[in-house]
Image (tube, rainbow, N blue to C red; front, side, top):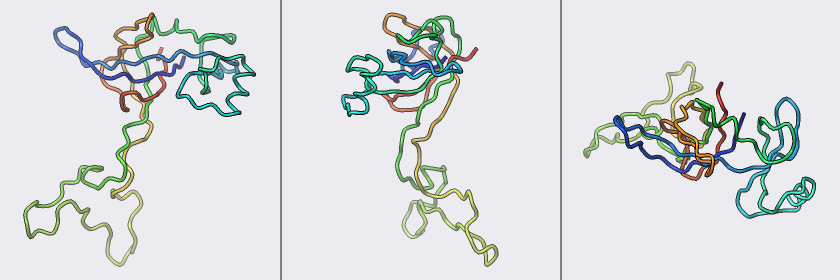
Length: 192
């Protein structure tokens, strides 16, 4: 089963030894339509913007105004209605998928951990990438060369152990860290 989650942040347990944990809020959602193969069209709340296409979907599935985003998930429901959270209560592990923090256009030192040169005056080689090519043959830069460029904001999936699940508040406590910034939306998939 898959669920849509929002990252709250990180904390620690008050035990010996102390364990770093990540808190995730499982988003409440409504199953609009069962598509087959365990997949379903699910509506959830995100932001305030509504256009005519979203309004048409809300009218088609008799949704309240707050459900203004749609996604396809693998669910345990057999019919339309509220999303079933029962599979989270007995789960031990989950696969967590988030986009990493975006760091924009970054140089080789930050992006690939290049060492760089001496920082003092006169070296004229501080944080530059250095030589990037070969001689006359092949006369081009090889594919996959580590260079400056866009860094972060890519989908990363990790496995985490579930420490607890608060059914009333829909808060999931995972052991360790997950990628992404606080407030980021992602998916979790229950691992059998």
